[in-house]
Amino acid sequence: MVRNAVPAGVLEWAEEREALRRAGEFAAADAIRERIRLAGYTVQDTASGPVVQAAPEYLTSRPADVPDRTDAPDGPDLSVLLLLDAPPAGDQPPWVVEDAARCLAGVLRATAGHRAEVCILDNGVGGDAGTWAADAGGGVGIESVHLDEPVGFGEARALQHRMATGRLLVWLDTGVELARGAASALIDAFAAPDVGAVGRWGGDLRGSVRRFEPADTPASGEPPRDVHALWGYLLALRRDLIRTGAVCVDPAFAFYRHADADVSFQVRAAGARTVLAPLPATQHLHRGWSAAPADEVERLSSGNYRRLLERWRPEMERLAASG
Image 1 (cartoon, rainbow, N blue to C red):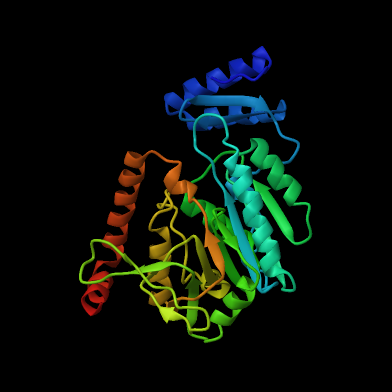
Image 2 (spheres, one colour):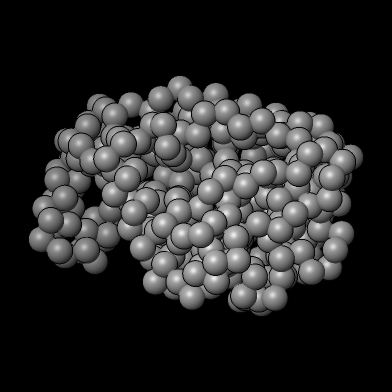
């Protein structure tokens, strides 16, 4: 257990809570967690054990307490959704803040002159990244919400959908840097009323359902082209598809891979198109892939792909045969 100069009594509570969790008595463990919170400390469960530290100056929330604006009317044209994640064990690497800061700078550059909001979800990361997000959340049109402990990728994106009120909801990985003109290009890509989702990168099934092959993004000046699956590094959805329940992010996709493909298939099942567009953006290192152990990435990716096949095999086989 990481102690960080925490009073002995709080540490004893944390140890009692850990014993209860191991015994499967989660309600009692949650009650002790609340006692620790009221004492001014937080406990975060990591792969190397619980970490107890002084509570940050900003407020943290449980997932159920994240603002729910699903029934609110559309507000700005765009809601850009930034998700802060970090490796589950060890010290927080500096790239968490560095990537997020670069990403946000690109968003502000790209959305200048547009009606846009930025929704930052600190997925239980805290530390320097939490402080950065709290500071960023003081800016005009930027909201930051801090979870008291991490949730899976699918649940985190669903929470961001709940927070946002933009006509278009934009998933943006913090490894992606938008350029000037990206917001305009994104809005223009939805000009056709039957377009339900737009992305910068994606893949097609060609002759087999075993994997998606990278699809060619149209060149600048060319119209959007249909694609079987959009990648979630930069993916925009019409909010009305979320509000009506036609599209939802399944929390079963706790790891990020193939959650975007599942959403793409839902969009088309709702009668809308998924298209690639020449959005001006640069993809830097994707940490969800590069910072995780290769065997763990493969295990989680394979599980998610099996889930995708179980749900969409007939449609995937049809697309593979037509490709």
